Length: 313
Length: 247
Image 1 (cartoon, rainbow over the protein chains, first blue to last red):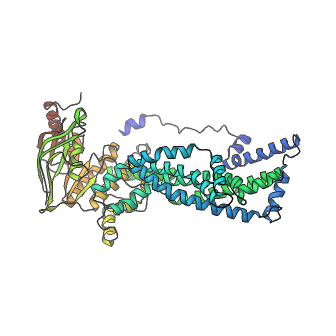
Image 2 (cartoon, helix red, strand yellow; image 1 turned 180 degrees about the vertical axis):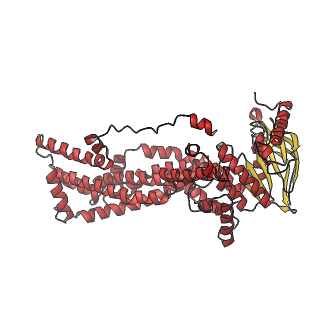
Image 3 (cartoon, one colour; image 1 turned 90 degrees about the horizontal axis):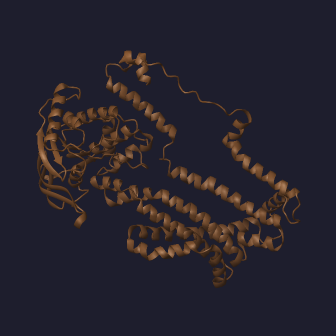
């Protein structure tokens, strides 16, 4: 075997062709690529602003100045940024919590029972198909200006996504793991805690992410039409005041808030909840250990006596 | 001592025109420290038999009794795929099926069996961080760690490469010898069955038990050994005689 191995011409390891040099390599760096988009966006914005197509088109520096003033509580509106954002967040989290609890209960029922699924199916589809604008107008007419309309709009916007995700989660529970647990006689409560709930987590997480972002959009729309406070109302206030830089400024507050929420809340929860999902590096490391172990097991007299080329192969 | 008694066992799936007979008229008596392999072509009811014995499936008719010193025996199961909870560490996977996972002796026992499959230092890893062979080792350790009276194994090495499977067969044999369990081992690999078993049950399509072969050779057996090759040829000849070879 050694002789045969020695006759085989030693293969050269494939050389990675490095075409990317200079500027291309620099642009391909993830951090550069990530910063490239906002840079190009601002450049395009400045270019369009320079064309002077409209007197009310907001210049970037005017928007930035407005945002800075709002942050320093210097505002013409009757509520400042923090009060506005705080109120909207209370409404958002209230509606989101109700969507998650009620949506999870209905989703579980639909996943477990065909008749519950049949009962709710068309309703869920109807709510899903309804434009959020219709909810906003309707709830404004029914409940007037207050908390009820915006909170209900948040619930109605988010709950179909929670229901559908949880239902799919229940339908995709790993049957083979439940069979394994029952073959070992694992009690039901332990199965629920360690098997059912963790298997639903990816679906619950998707439900929370969708429910939150869609609920947020529903809330803002409802605040435009059915509230006298909140982020949506504030955007309408600046719209009525004919201040386009303020409308864009508040839109950016949204973007910044959504970014922080994604980066520092959802991503952190995701990392913590799904830390069991392996990184490619970890698998590679353990595989290498395994190969060594097997070679030693197959040749207990001394793995080192194996020809080096065979071991490497 | 574990005792498995099967009488007139029958299992059907589906109804009407879709009815499929998975097992029929199976009668068996297995007792003591034996390693029994169940071989046969695909769809002959091998896995169904294990599923019925372990309680995952119920028989259509007939009786199954698994006792240990006249009490209900405690079973363990090793599946074709490791079937580990991916969101729990290796140690927690073993504890998950323990009768009392919070007891300190449960953790000690699990650690002992992880050591036996050479994964003593991998208890805090998640299954996804291990290779397929290592995951199957964890599955074996999990089954042994419940200290079962009877161990059911359903083609546990069929997804693994030849080197890994060979290594695991040796470990399994050593653990069987060390613990004195009764093992029922489903495989489609006749060589594997001859290498490991004291008894081989041959099933045919339609779920009939066609032959019950005693393999009377000393352990440990090496696949390269001439006697093992002769025994394997003998079992394969039985396959041909019974017309079980896939065409």
